[in-house]
Image 1 (cartoon, rainbow, N blue to C red):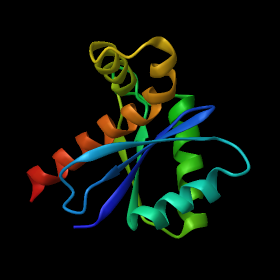
Image 2 (tube, helix red, strand yellow; image 1 turned 135 degrees about the vertical axis):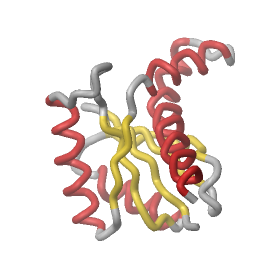
Image 3 (cartoon, rainbow, N blue to C red; image 1 turned 45 degrees about the horizontal axis):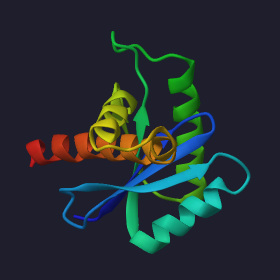
Image 4 (cartoon, rainbow, N blue to C red; image 1 turned 90 degrees about the horizontal axis):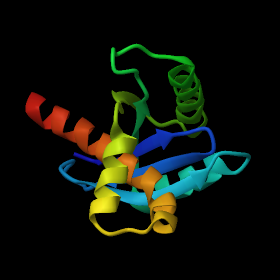
Length: 138
């Protein structure tokens, strides 16, 4: 197995998580502001963690439908993968931000702390779901 980078793509920030070498555990890394330097910063993380693939979370409604945000995430992520020449997978990220918020609150994080950790935590929850789904297939 190899390391994967999980992306929780928002309008302003991209939450980042990375898997371990065995593809068992996802760990939050941080976030990158969307903008002119986002690809350079993501490439630096890919190099640092020796990542061989990306997993981008697709926001869906509770009924499973994809809206405008999902379209934006797909378009942005596909272009990123093309620009960086790295494989890309998509995974349902329904409720990951809500789960991340609850986890951070229950761990005692103050509002200011949560604001800086929520995107990476949501990315880790999404990536963990992807890793778990892949381990069932093995």
